[in-house]
Image 1 (cartoon, one colour):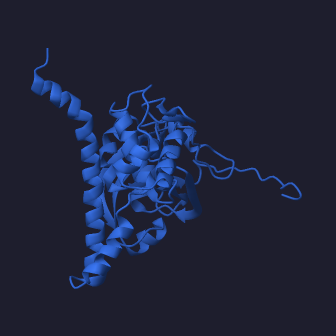
Image 2 (cartoon, rainbow, N blue to C red):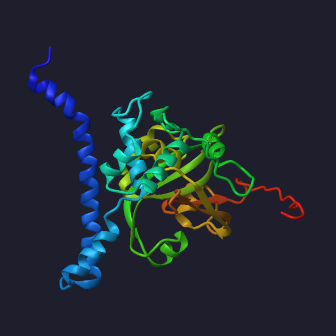
Image 3 (cartoon, rainbow, N blue to C red):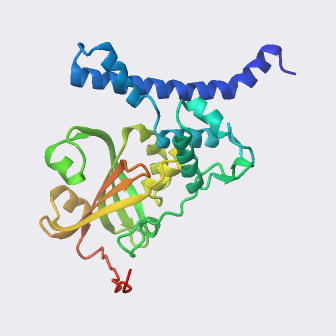
Length: 300
């Protein structure tokens, strides 16, 4: 039998968890507007103007709320079969509008975590997101299938700041910090390397590294989605012919300067934010992109 103190601690655990989430929101918001204040105005910004600017950034984005709720569901604070707090309660909890809460709950629906019915609330249906996204080029080769048939062999993991030429290639701002995971994709049948890939992910997802090592046949974007609830809404691809350079040529067992294919993919969430970028290099004789073009129907 629990003591009164243990009982009180048990009952307060969910509240403490929610308070930790709110603390992180407030901490991140403070850093945001403090950085803006110093970057644009130094330390002489008038108080009234500072508070007006602060007001613009204090409300959390729906994607942040969706991520917080996803982590709460995964941690068991909202078990399968339970009902999430109502919209008005969530508005109060996250200090935001009903529109933002509804957008966050829609994200959870898209992930297969919850179902929503009028007058019945938001019911938790699963503790892990479903993965029915199939990134592709047009209507083609499925990247998920590619991941299961070509096993990832990790080579290195390091924090890096990209600048100038590399930043331009990745399509991000110069000076952006990333966690870079480098690996070789090998054919699961004969072990022959079919590609070298550098995956750049948001440093806040560094904990996914262990999952990347444990599940070499799963796309990193799928692991981020499962762990953090950051759902991929779109993948943008750029494909171009290149000459394979020294380091990649040695790893791929081809002659330096031989023809290859470079594929750059940007993984984008529902809010339009890029949270992962991959650069893959393939020898020309080991990777093929095929597509089918159909004539559009007249009037469409």
